[in-house]
Amino acid sequence: AARRANALKIAVIAGDGIGKEVMPEGLRVLRAAAERFGLDITFDEFPFSSWDYYEQHGRMLPVDWKDQIGGHDAIYFGAVGWPEKIADHVSLWGSLLLFRREFDQYVNLRPVRLMPGVPSPLAGRKPGDIDFYVVRENTEGEYSSIGGRMFEGTEREVVVQETVMSRVGVDRILRFAFELARRTPKKHLTSATKSNGIAITMPYWDERVEAMAKHYPDVKWDKYHIDILTAHFVLNPQRFNVVVASNLFGDILSDLGPACTGTIGIAPSGNINPAGDFPSLFEPVHGSAPDIAGQGIANPVGQIWAGAMMLDHLGHAQAAAAIVRAIEEVLAQKPLRTRDLGGLADTETCGAAIADAVARSA
Ligand code: ATP
Ligand code: MG
Image (cartoon, rainbow, N blue to C red; front, side):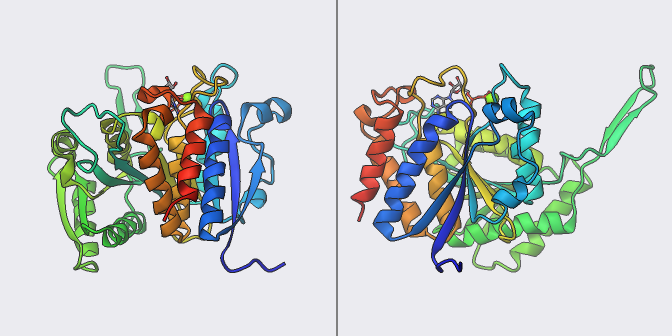
């Protein structure tokens, strides 16, 4: 049957550990947003990409996983990994990293925002001081497997690993970042580089940034070497709006950014295929947290915020903004925050409060 024009079909994969506890709260909030904003969303839940599935089937995914989820508008993901039972490289490479590669999710997007009620490890920072995006290239760059060892085991041993930057690969991440910057009020972009030390690939990156910037005359941009850029993340976070970086630099920045905003429990992440020929995947930054799983105390905000990013990506900016405002409203209240934020609430209380706030939103 033909799908209604504004109907969304979401593949839901809760995964392992606290993924199973925070996902129901993410869905609760998305259902509230759908109701409030008149969106038609179908959620299809899949049991794979989990230890339970692996135990029964001897693999992380069914053979036809691409057919099962490839036609959905997006993938809403919880957390994968149960290190007591299965090595992280097996669970990760057998699921999440396969999605990333097969669905060509070449953007990793992380909003970095200091929320009310969340103490920043940076002294004196208030909500509003830290509010930017890190855009990480997710498919090439420093994380290539080209290289090798020579004269192994001898005094002459040499090890080489190449960085790969293709024009297509660099341009597509820059285009995404400039487009994002253009949609933000500040219309400002920062490029992470190191062309004073890495003398071949990084000058090329800078060159492509300059070429791309010509297509975006309305976007102001600057560049920083990665060493001083990390210092400014900590000392002057208010300078940043959209920060675009290669795979390695982006990896570092996309952990440093959320660390400056307090807790791993609230940060979301998008693995995005902007062309939309395959679904993008939205997940909390945190993992399965075996140490607190099964107790109903995990912070559901990372999962819920990832849901907001997903709606924004799918063109429902108003509903997405309402969820982010609801998160801010609830985090400001100690009885509604979870314990990792010094609050009193369990996972469900916090999630239900955010869903309520979305239902009441203007
Ligand atoms: P990775 O997914 O990279 O393997 P990990 O398994 O090492 O990460 P996490 O599962 O994210 O790490 O957990 C790291 C720490 O943060 C743990 O002590 C965990 O309890 C805590 N933590 C993670 N997510 C949450 C959350 N949503 N609420 C409360 N605490 C959390
Ligand atoms: Mg883990």
